[in-house]
Length: 362
Image (cartoon, rainbow, N blue to C red; front, side, top):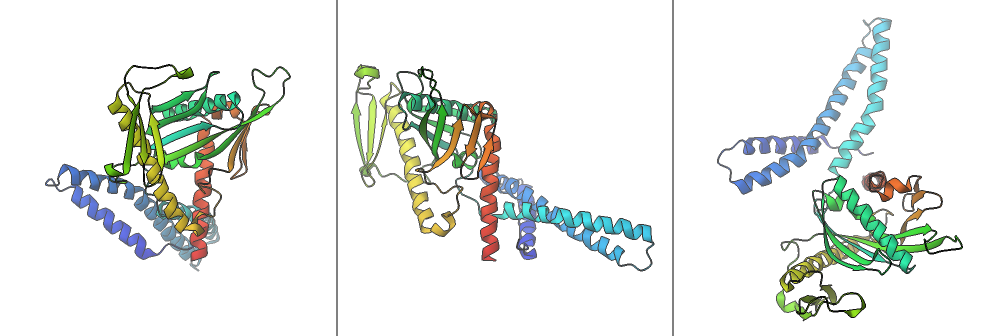
């Protein structure tokens, strides 16, 4: 692992001290105070990690000096030797933690997200599985204090969803959920299967960072907006007004339809929210392709065509194929509480990949 330049640590400490002074200024506007507070809060754990590393290095130097002191008796030398070994064991992890904190950050990590789940191969069983996944993410979000708001849903006749789109709002949502994008596969015996045969079905998950107007500017002249009457299952009319909205983004051909609300205005607002997120993701993917060498890692490749995870009911296991991790706790994962273990492992692998690239570059 490359050593961290002392000059970089010194700059961090200097900026942290400047922020502390600026925050103490009673004349700062509310807007400026908010920005300063955010930067200070982000920088504080980094400075604390740097201080912890500096302290360990200093303690190592002191213990080695004692070890080399000819006037020291055997017992004190043994204590100093033990301390040297202990500190040497702690140093790599302390440096690694600081390296992780200093890794380039994905600007979208702190954003909320648009969660899209679509039933894939498997018919009714795939729709039921899409419903299971939506419930899993909803419960995971609830545990973390995030808010889940349904944007649109196309329910299947037997339960579950052919397609469901929701907004997940909270601090750092995208950072935790971005690794969920991809094809999820389920292996289980459907309730309707009399022969007890295991069926394989799939659903596709897409997690998009929720974009603000400042992130993506949409020109009204680039939109074609069609309004039509909402229809329910079997083509029946849900209401008697043209409240459903279909927005076509002419430059890209992206189409978003929204009919869940009775108000045309609300449907348009929700459709624009999804469109903005999809356009933002397109821009991010374009930038990612331009930095293709940094996207060769398995984790976070963004390739939604690949199967990323299998949920095997007969064996009660979940396997994430990107990191070859299997957990024999299917029920806990689908209830949301066990999902964090998978996400933590994916985050750790992503960090390890980035650190390895830094090492190669160094």
